[in-house]
Amino acid sequence: MTQTITVIRGDGIGPEIMDATLHVLDAMNLGLSYEFADAGLVALEKHGELLPAATMDSIRKNRIALKSPLTTPVGEGFSSINVELRKRFDLYANVRPAKSFPNTKSRFPSGVDLITVRENTEGAYIGEGQSLSEDGETALLTQKITRRSSERIVRYAFDLARKTGRKKVTVVHKANILKSTSGLFLKTAREVAQQYPDIQCNEMIVDNTCMQLVMRPEQFDIIVTTNLFGDIISDLCAGLVGGLGLAPGANIGTDAAIFEAVHGSAPDIAGKGIANPCALLLGAAQMLDHLGQPEKATKLREAIVATLEAKDSLTPDLGGEGNTLSFAKAIASRATA
View 1 (tube, rainbow, N blue to C red):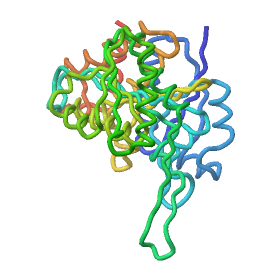
View 2 (spheres, rainbow, N blue to C red; view 1 turned 45 degrees about the vertical axis):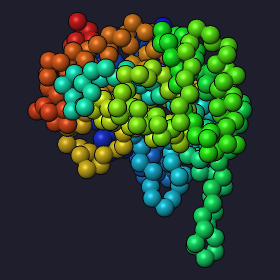
View 3 (cartoon, one colour; view 1 turned 120 degrees about the vertical axis):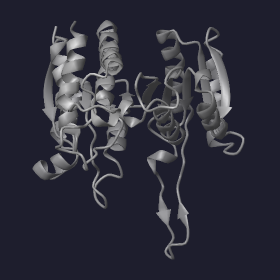
């Protein structure tokens, strides 16, 4: 049975890492077909808008999208194309795994294996209610946290723990100071946690969480938190395992899901054929899990690890002399062995 997915090739290095990723997926014979759609600068140049209606219709129809990095122009359009996609499709769960990989530039070559589950649709990160006084001396921002969104993201984290065999969820907050917003999130999380007696629930203030992640990341299993805190923590976790070049992300909603590399479009190296496709490939593995192909997802992740271990055709950022496509071909050969 063929599954059609929307493919957004993106800006900068996006087309290069997407072509590499599709090369691997095609080699694995997964029964996928692709409907290509434009977004970002490419869409602005071709269609006069950053998110054309045809792209939105494609995601709505297929319910699954694989997306390369997009560039939001400065001074026009949305504050963030990614934020706009999350809002329009109510992609409430941002899921960012961070796992140690061999032969990477990391302070923790082993022992890191955690997932950050970030609420994706509200909170300070959305940037609602921004205003600047007429004299330019005072800026305001509204932060909204709801019980509904808090409950569904915490429930998602606990369900994910059960599904993946993880035993601990850490609720990260700042309720000691932000007693209304973070306080509501924490109170709701405690209520949800009571329904999962088989999963250990820890609570940790966000600043202590950052310190503990740097000192002893192995103590964490799944972290669940609000939007802005999750944005910061998930990048910190990427730094623990070698950087954003190894950091995938999933944006999950009830009616749609978008899988991506979380790094930027890196225009400084675009067109040089040296971009590392691992983050998007790992995002594709998350997509395969979501599509009910966990064995194939595992096979893809194992092929990436084996290629890193063998130092086969690695891109320059990983210390090799290979290129984007040769690295992808090395991974594909192991994924189909």
